[in-house]
Length: 311
Image (cartoon, rainbow, N blue to C red; front, side, top):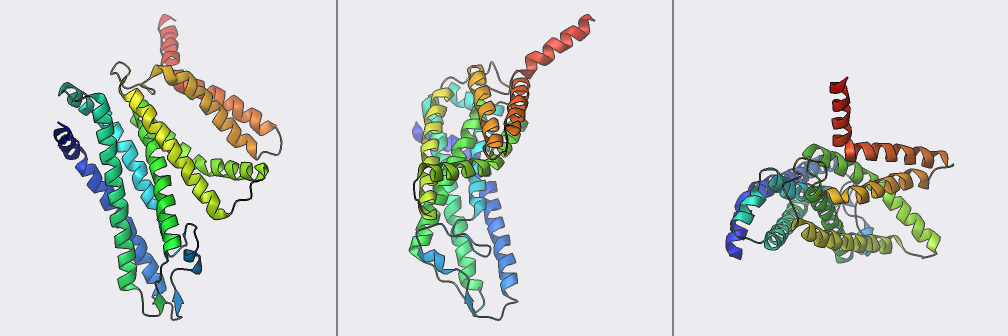
């Protein structure tokens, strides 16, 4: 029964895996071509990879990154697509009606999605490193070291799994594709502010951590967040209903918690580095109004149309 389920999920999503994997390889190829073109104009002998690759910290420079950023983008896309598409065209209902339990469908789909994403990472890294190894000019060295590679791979993969979990969970609870993408894009862009707050809290706490230690700590936080979201998602998936299909939140019981988190999150981000309390007040008022309208706008608009029809 498990093999049959895996076969159905694979047939369903293999095109998505191929598209995301092909896009990742294409970006890697384009990046390598750009870097090699720039290096071809240099006659000085030097190393493509700096000495920091020998340290236990992530290595990322303009010419070479041990774990390129677009690999996290691949996880980001897969997290959205694997859950959102199946909710939209009733593939989940087909699996449920075929006798597969929701728990088995959820974890099978999640396992296959993560496995496909990791395979994409491995293939992309092999292609990226291999092209540099074969095509670099003779005057440019390409020497790697395990400390920087292991740190970059482990931390990069941990962060990517966290991003996947975030998108996976958001796609499970948000029923409108456009709103889902807007929400995740906005939240993803705001993560730089969250990172700044985290670094400030570490400094204020008195912890004397190196850059590498902060990176490992952040990766651990991402993995912990991923575990929480995966387990919470499994709980909600078993209670998924078509009754609220097409609404912003597929689980009406989450409206108030989401509203509170949104208001606190936006207010904190805007107030943290503000020089006075005005920014915090403005952010609080704006988030309260916008969040309320965004989450409860169907009922608001319905009442507005009813009043217009009566008048």
